[in-house]
Length: 254
Image 1 (cartoon, rainbow, N blue to C red):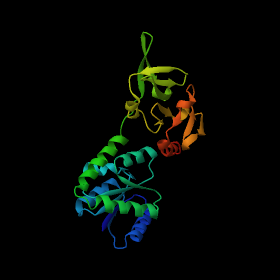
Image 2: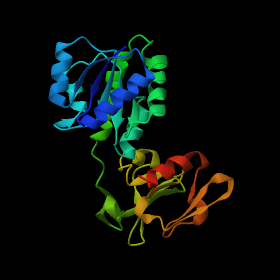
Image 3: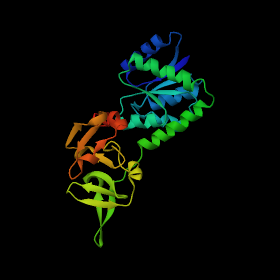
Image 4: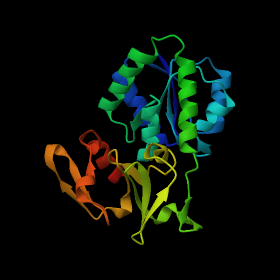
């Protein structure tokens, strides 16, 4: 197997190469690159490797830019110290990644997944390119900054930064603001999930999308769930669904 390593930190590149050789004894490191520019140059002048290990943040930009300049025909495993939302974008689009500093066990898992699901399936390069495009779109998405709400006979704007949480009741969606008021907004919670920044807001259950700054307390609850204390909210409604607890913990601890 021939691999290309794209990494701008020399120490990290050497460590990754050493670990790869431990996991795949017969590997051939076809080349290394440390920037967007040098990666494009290498890929334009060499046969496509079997696998590329690619750091996201390079000295002259994000490695996603490489995909805009050249048609990459190789599977990619990203090495990244990126934030939780970026990782969620990768998970959603089935792009594999390894958190830095690279761990041998995680490397073995990623390579096994590559061999099982990607390398042996026809058309994998096109699927990877499409998935990369979706990730880039998610990471560059602009999120809503304000909502227009009706107050009596008047319209006013609510800044998203002033929203504690969104909730639904009686088939109506509300936003609760830091001044303690509830305002009706013309979007469902499902729509709001894609409109607000997921690093700031998290959907805990069918009824609530909460802002991190609004959480006053977190209490262990029945069936391995968590109950949140939010200003002006009924505590029985502010329970993190059991299947969302682990993801919620990761979201808080980013």
